[in-house]
Length: 161
Image: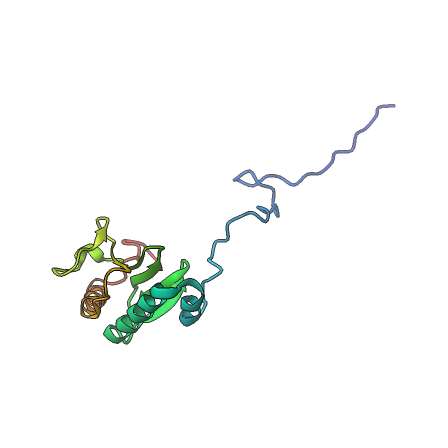
């Protein structure tokens, strides 16, 4: 009499080498920031303190006045302004507050020095400097005009939908 073994059935691996239903565990980085969707005013209260909170509030008010049709929401853990695509963001650091622009390299700014790469640029506002609201409004209006003329700066070019 021949002995027979019963095969144990194991789920097959997927293309990436993981079994169906396998989880990454609790240490996995969330794909969406837990701050996403938080009201912007609440974000300011939680994430900006002291002099930085005052600068952020003034930046938000100035940008909203310069681009009244724009929306602002929390994305990537920071306020992001959008009108026909993203055009600006605010970020808090220890020694300064940053106002960044998706198309910063295309902005004209004779009275300011913007830092950054070949496309995105930002304005750093340290404690020692006062906020130039006219400059901020000018940069915001330029960024909105670029989005109105050229479209969403984050849209994939040539993508077929």
